[in-house]
Length: 127
Length: 127
DNA sequence: CAACTTAGTTTCTCGAAGGAAACTACTTTC
DNA sequence: GAAAGTAGTTTCCTTCGAGAAACTAAGTTG
View (cartoon, each protein chain N blue to C red):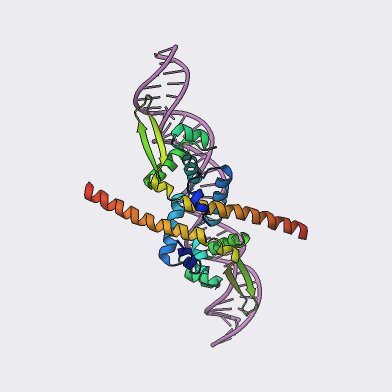
């Protein structure tokens, strides 16, 4: 668990590391994937639920993003034998393993916002 | 430091968290940013060094990606008074704060690769 | 059988991302 | 003064990501 003590000193550029980072980025890329994952982190959702909750998404994009997430094992798609048929999407246990990454990114993004705000203020006062 | 004990239970979808994650993703997006950051994590580099080391990049893209990284404070650009003038790019202390994210992503991407390989083997043996 | 719901797919379109090659501008070396 | 090295910029072109709207398909209700 104190692997980071070492990690923080090392360069992060061995080609295999970069490839791995890019793989992760690719899987999370696309305008809606992270929002969808976030949405499903609250609990299972059906297609129409996601259409309503993911603000601004169209059915084509939702369908495409869900397919990609499913192919990568991050979410599961279960057809329920209801009438009419409904489809339940859920974060898989594997999808949950993204949490550390997503929290690190949320954390960094939050700090970045604060830093940018501070920089702007500094520039206004200065120039 | 054991914030994660709590974090791992919570959903990650409060709009502000998602916004922060997307901010981070945007800053790291672009085909070459991560490779450039990785490259600079070994030490300072000049424009032509990066052209040589970042395989496949063109001068237009390198210039553009460097500008964006500089705007976000992740790298610094220093004109050296040599003849002919050279320009040194370096990871800033702020750029270094991306390390935890990048290592989490490298880690996850590595595990994902192993998992995908295992899945493929399983499918071949099975069907 | 018309209207509505669920869960998508298809088509058409536009703008952004990215690449190749040529060009700028300055300086040193031969 | 031509060639080569520095650090880019500009132009032109192609491809990819994404959106809007229409359409499919199956079942349900009145």
